Length: 338
Image: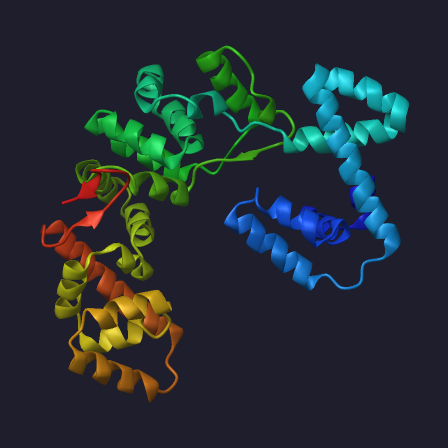
């Protein structure tokens, strides 16, 4: 198989393709990419040294074959594409091209639900077992999952949230079975891999970051009783020091007043320039000048001390938030913590 022979990653082959096609064509391609894709591809291009002519030809051939197969699939499906490619490339190479293309075209489980309104999803799954609901929500977009989770009965919210957080991997057979029940058909994405990564703490954090404050508080209070370690881990990830940039100036000024100066100086040691500028902007000129001078002459400090200082400031923010002293914008539109 050409991909194995070259030993290149997809990004490396994309970089070689851009180099081979030239700057004008590459510039037009870049217009259709996301910022992250452009950044990744630019990095690969900058890391590329002299590329042998044979390797360029191999990458071009693979790109051409894949594009050709995709065109055939759009005309008459995978079966039609395979028939044409069998004649053009031979059975073995045609099989490799089709496998490479179909693997990139796989649909994530429950894709049909990601196109649905959250209220429709709720109506569809609210009477299912909590584990089934957790499985479905872990595959939805965080914004959708947040709306559905918020609409569940309070006693079910924490249970479902815990199941998402503790979910590790789910066999494709289970996913397919759930999909057969919910949509009457099997998702092709669950067939080609032994296990599909599902849920996890970061997944439930993304969901909770979009729910209303009442739902979040209810879930975390139940988790603190049932599984305090899990609840603490979730809370740590829900708001980190760098997230201070989402606070308005009034809230930042209140956080500064409630925090120890030593903690603020330590916390800013590894902060981004955006966070530093925000904090300095909300200090008095005298305080900002004093901080800058102390930071300039500060000797080496342990990263552990910096992280502890940031944690103390985050705890202060959450206490102010719980007391209704500051407001943190959450989710979309009117979804705020009060």
